Image (tube, rainbow, N blue to C red; front, side, top):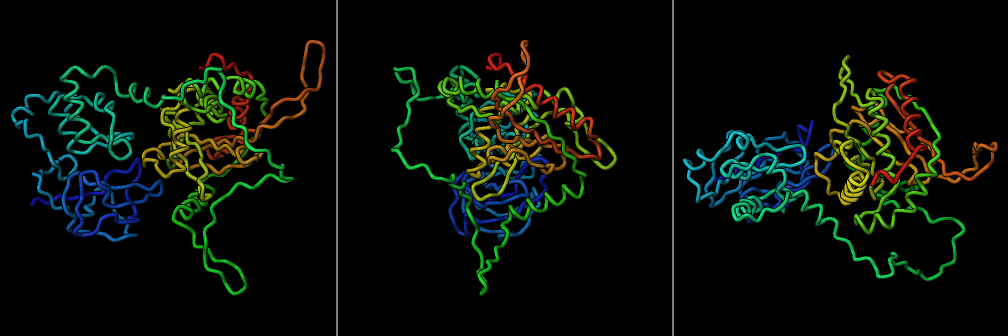
Length: 459
């Protein structure tokens, strides 16, 4: 029997440790390849740690609530498979490439394939890296292989199937294209050409709208009726980050009103067709993010971070989007390189991240690396609000509710009063490095883009 060291894997940019929240396997339990052995939590997200080999769990080095450094051995698994150490990562792995000798491997590894690494978006096990090296699969090619493991991770079977298909000439198009096709499977359009309309039974309209339900934690009830509720781990972390942000950054706010009538009318006109064509609902959030990105390009000194006495001007535009969870907590998944996405791509990214955030299925890398954050407080009916900066960023924009408002409309024949769809943009920024001129002009620039909207050229 060989002994496999299960180590705490890398869990995202800047993450150096994690807290064990649960062991899903006990000593003596049989483990299959890719089975989850333990669950961990960082200050960003919860995650699962799978085994790379089948075997039996024989030793645990840590208990629940212990804090473990990335790369530390957390458990020992005995396995019948032959294993060897990966000198690059220190993880013991199973090569299981019986048909390939060491001499063949040395002969087939090319320069590009010899530098396979895990990225911020995908983690590769040492076994998968070895297979890629042996088969001459480049980093770019590996990144395109669809994964069937946890969170889309590429397993041994995935890469071996890809190798077999490639040799047989069955790889007809790239994996991202294939995944996009699969994701766009939509219910066929009815023959009438209209989306089916539901006809709910008539109900008496309540005098006051029903409140949005928020899961309420329970605690210990005192004799006087008061209830003592212990903060959960995420609430403690949120509190810590909020206090730290206010301590570090002197917050200043600018408020701008924007007429978004053109956007509202355009979305109402195309939303059903968009749903049929893309299999996605288009909301206002990705539209607003699209123009915030354009404003960031006009004012790149908003897309910065502070490191001591130095200002770091970020090359990438990574947009964080605040998502309210069912339990009332908050999480901020990040759309990486958001400026490279079309409006359709942003819509799919927003919908996907929001859905998986509420289902607690985000990957660690998906909530790190943000350079600017957007929060849609209008979804709660709020018209404006002063958001707290998401450190180490220097600014955040809160999107207020869209409301029908009377407004003065300038025409060639003179001014007139009309009904317009308006909203308030609230821009909070770090006054250490962003002065009122820049912070105010940025908010105004976003409003100008929204008011001069021409949507037909975006899809």
